[in-house]
Image 1 (cartoon, helix red, strand yellow):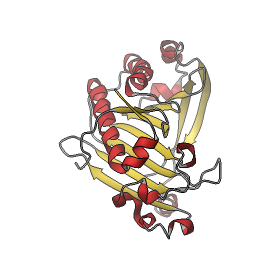
Image 2 (cartoon, rainbow, N blue to C red; image 1 turned 45 degrees about the vertical axis):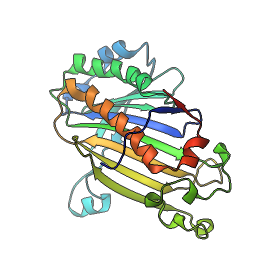
Image 3 (tube, rainbow, N blue to C red; image 1 turned 90 degrees about the vertical axis):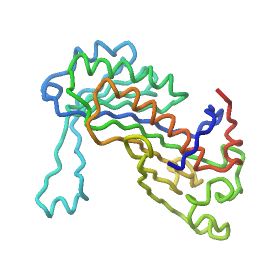
Image 4 (cartoon, rainbow, N blue to C red; image 1 turned 180 degrees about the vertical axis):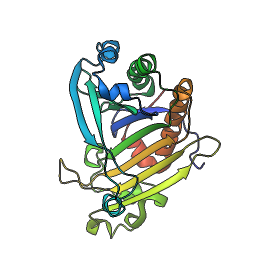
Length: 259
């Protein structure tokens, strides 16, 4: 894998908008058929806010229109949400998945502490036989203005093998959107990473930020006891991948602090 080992750092100006961990497991019908009261009791001190179960559409593995032509219907699942008091972290539980979303990520050790309690509660209350998918996703949104880099071309901040047409500074003023996707097998480890990167319109301002969205996952049987080690490995690779994506100028502008 081309993501070379790099020193671990914390950025004072952290571009992370969301970090999402999800584990999937064979469906457990009891989760959908009754309120998860015992599960809530185990996590309530950490996640006191509860949203009544809501039904959401489950995605098809095919484009929706094609699925309809083939006679496939979009299923629905009941999802229960538990949030921290400040709303920065949300746990979602459904009959076949548990997810934690953090909108205020600081470092892996803190995130793991936020995840460990619901993960343990899942195993003790519902005892999934194994996990069918383990995933960890980092969504970085780089805004030049917030980093004192207004007017600096993206070709000076993002590596050339990612920046695409933006490598031509004269093209940048004319590019309104430029998104790319890559799927990479992790060398020497189980799993893959899907990288979505490029320009996207910012809903909160006129500046078009650069997105680096890396989704690490393994879509095969994983024993529940091995999930922690798998996720910790993904976390380390995510740090190396992000550094592989950016130039030194952007790295320094985010004010890295060594650990």
